Image (cartoon, rainbow, N blue to C red; front, side):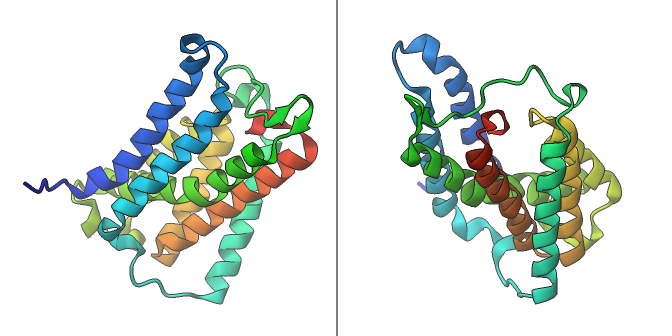
Length: 222
């Protein structure tokens, strides 16, 4: 028997799976002595990718993409801007909790490039797609109307943009930078009507941040 899920399910499920493994990461060291919790990240990314691929036919917002060089350049600039703001808005009062060690891919003082590469690829290629499908395509439009697929991105109210961006911000350790990022990605989706540009900007931000972290050793940003 085939089970029919709501459109919301296909956008919530990958994000929820990511969060579940995130919780397991915080508890794994206590539950499994000697286990290197860093290896849960590749497993988490593999799980999310598997779900995104399995559900791909339900992501109607990704169909009919119309490329525009101007919008692509704008999205590139927006992604770089969010990266610059992200590393600048690290004031103690703009953080949720104390700064931790972050994701440190070093083993015996040397970077494990399999771990580092997986972390960078997951952050730059998988997380933007997963989060934009959830936060912008689903949550932002759902705030305006439960039948969110019927809401044109250009018609999304600024109330929905603000609410979804604030909640998106508080999902992150750097809540203020997260709110700013949410506003920028939401503005791109609203302006272009194409989720691809928000995904691209998000990927640029995460990719630039990852390269910067690897270059500087500022692991707390991971």
